[in-house]
Length: 299
Ligand SMILES: [Zn+2]
Image (cartoon, rainbow, N blue to C red; front, side, top):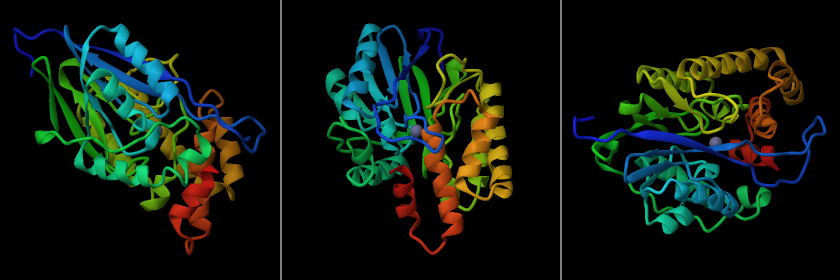
């Protein structure tokens, strides 16, 4: 809650480049991960950073940007358990003497992602630093930044289980992690695990209910703005469209081709392809272990 004495908050977004990757997509183009966004929310002295990225190179680039803001970084907040959002947290926590914070559900997911590093992440990306889970919860899921409240809102299953967003009421801002996307293909594997798109849609409704003006998507095209109404509407539309294609397209490749035809300017086709292979893999082979399908969809 803002008081008359409190200083004004500001936020700024750094979009990191994807790490190098081998392999090609079905259409022949080189595989490349999606751009990854980190948000710095800051007052006159202190700052909070979200989703600190995955590799040592990304941590260096992000850290230099944070340092250039000249604030004391108190906390690093992680929106959900996927490694691309936090494997580099330790490097930044050490560089700035900051605490790593997440919800209890996200911390459990972080443990799971750390445990599957060698089977998945390290097979695709070099340069991921040691990633012990040091995140802690905060009372009532609330952080304070120079007398302003930052609220962790738990929104459930979206592109992974136990996802959260960070609501900054005094900025009318939601840092949305992977609940909302912005000009980037969405990772669609998780709806296969939870039997459909309903939970994700419910999470989008929860973000909308916070009445943000600005939404920072965890994966975004940096040429686009942070308009909440647009990004929320486009994320819903993308899911509606995915559900339709799942009915009309007979294979992962047909779905992939139809999606890139409908969204020619969207970034992140590698993540689209991984997610779509899981969607069809789980649908067509319900007898198989879904977690194995997830892993093989990336490799
Ligand atoms: Zn992500």
